[in-house]
Each structure stands twice: as C-alpha cells, then as structure tokens.
Length: 112
Image (cartoon, rainbow, N blue to C red; front, side, top):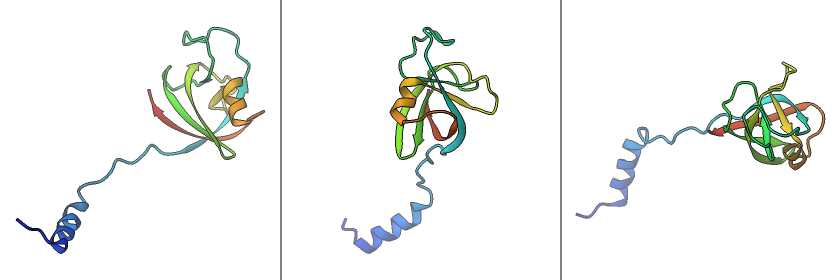
C-alpha cells in the first residue's frame, strides 16, 4: 500500500490532538537562603550537595536556576526555620549558583 504525503499529513492532523506530550513540571520561584553544613542532616545524610526544605520528601531532586546558572540538588535536610523562606541551600549548592544571602530563586521539582 502506498500512502501519499497528503494522506499522511491528514492522518497526523486528525490524531495530532490526541497525542499530547506530557507537560514538564512548572518552574516556580521562592525565597531561599544558604547555610553551612553541620554534619549529619535530619534526613540521615552527610550533606555534600543538598538543600533543606520543610515539605518535600527527603531524597527529592530539585533543579534550581539563579542568574543564568542552574544546578540539581537533593533534599537532604529539614528547614529553613524562617517561614518566609522555602529552601536553604547548603554551601556547595549556593557556591555553584554563586548565590549568597537571601534572594528569590527559580526551582522545579524533578523527581524523588
């Protein structure tokens, strides 16, 4: 059976509305700060490259973007304990992003 390009285009157009790619998770923003590691974390990790968060499960991976840089880190601790902030970045993550102090950061939860 020979299918013309026109018939193929009509077929693809007819089913195209039904073949949707899954939407990527949204990019959100939140206030964040950074902290110095102090040994074992609340999640049982010896934090090397992680973040603290009160709500996400331990081990959840999060992509952070800040001023043109991006890095993926794992939730390894609980906090921050200043409730206007959603994340505390450990010094390694903050250094990779060249983040200091308190600022708004873009993030996307990418997996557990």
